[in-house]
Image (cartoon, rainbow, N blue to C red; front, side, top):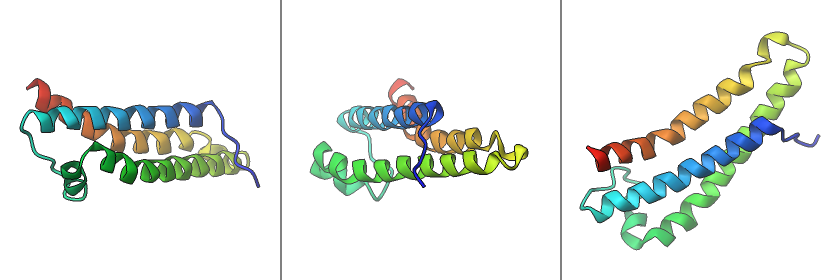
Length: 113
């Protein structure tokens, strides 16, 4: 059964990509200013350079976007039979986007404060 990609999925995926780019840019600024990477899993990648971060994290973000799109599509299909689930897709995207929004927001606070 093919996955249907609607406006919600496209906007959500683009927002995740924008947050990922924002995280990369703001982390680079923080590290250039003498800050430290707090994530122990990405610290060695940043020490090796931004290309290492891109090569390692881009596939991870792609899998997470794909997984969220699939879950959103499955909820859409189920919600046709169960009206109570009709808005659940928005909650899934809100949870995922808030998780990806935290690093760039934290970095901006470090930069600005």
